[in-house]
Image 1 (cartoon, protein in one colour):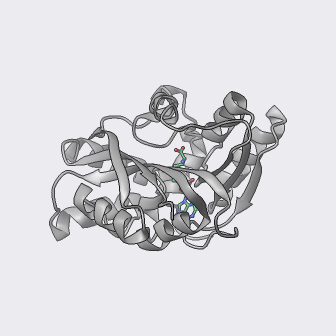
Image 2: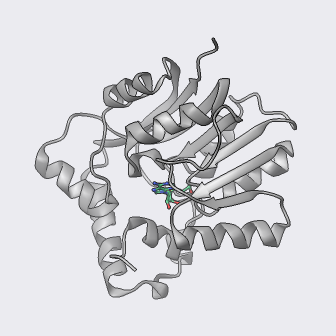
Amino acid sequence: MGKFNYIDLIATLGIEDAHPGGFDLTKEMVKFLPIKSNSSVLEVGCGSGKTAQYLYEKYKCSIDTIDINDRMLINAKKRFNKKKIPINLFQASAEKLPFQENVYDFIISESVTSFTNVDKSLSEYARVLKEGGYLLAIEMTTEKPLTVREQKDIQDVYGISKTRTVKEWENSLVRAGFSEYKIIRGETIVNTSTKPMSSLPFDKLPPDGIELLHKFQKLILRYKDVLGYRVFLCRKQRY
Ligand SMILES: C[S@@+](CC[C@H](N)C(=O)[O-])C[C@H]1O[C@@H](n2cnc3c(N)ncnc32)[C@H](O)[C@@H]1O
């Protein structure tokens, strides 16, 4: 197993909605999508599976989920089995989706694409979406271009190779074929966890996990006005 990273940290602590705005934002943003019971939905980077569970319970639609991280897959599988909900779970990368083209009406990705090669993942989303299909992406942004030192501070904690400004996200979306998009929400990050900190199982963390947690807390404070997020609602072109 590799170095204990940010994704291992949130999976070990059992943080269920590990994206800016948390589950409240998910519920609000999903209202923008015209999901019906006969819709096919893909959640990329499903983490604990909480959003997928919510979507199934609300719409009874067909849902596939993928994640790359072993710990996250175990957590999601436990959830789907416990609730007896028929959601398909695959271990795969957003950068190489194991699906045919033009199969999904909706893709949801909450704070995932930033952790991947963004251009590769966005073009995979465009490939597997049906024409006219929707992508809802909650993504981390930097509110200004960063210095090399600042990028490195953020990279050391999140493990992502490059944080992006809104303009950089927009350029990537257009390059991937999502020229129809709008930003439906966005602000700076204050606290991404909705679980009270005291309820988290810190005793499960290895020493390098505790060190990473401390670095994370410092980073969030230091960059509270610089790190933000946007919710992009995008549509694949109809020909
Ligand atoms: C910050 S967490 C968000 C999890 C979940 N979407 C949520 O909001 O709670 C990022 C998720 O993306 C997954 N991830 C990272 N890189 C990935 C990749 N290349 N392909 C698929 N999933 C990936 C991680 O394993 C993790 O579950």
